[in-house]
Image (tube, rainbow, N blue to C red; front, top):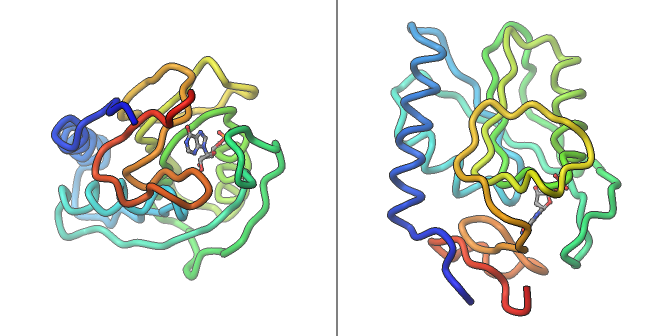
Length: 171
Ligand code: IMP
């Protein structure tokens, strides 16, 4: 598998994103991170470790892919949040925005829960594959149309533990 983004490149970029988020939400008020499982777990973990003490966390799980490399277009909730979002500054943390269908679904259902603000951070974006326009406030890296794995991203549940992002063989 070819390495597309090294561990060091990812670490540097995530520090930039964390600083940008703190600049956009100055002050003492909490920042509530919603990690989209499973792919977002490593990104979230590194992002919040670069931030101060005013962070709270929650987790949501949705499925949009079977075991293939192409989206079915159908998004289903598998695990809802444990806490409400009313009056909070919320940041959705997602691994990748591809067609945009998953994020559109998530933003719609979370916005309906009356957060004070709702922003989205994605480690990766594949703009050439977009089917719906979706707003992403923080993007780590924009990539070409490759199926990538590692750093949380899987193929058939494998490779999530790689510390870097790699292009899957045969892509
Ligand atoms: P979207 O709904 O098409 O934007 O897809 C978003 C979801 O599809 C992501 O949260 C990933 O779980 C998955 N996905 C999209 N592209 C890739 C990829 O290149 N590798 C691994 N998973 C991907």
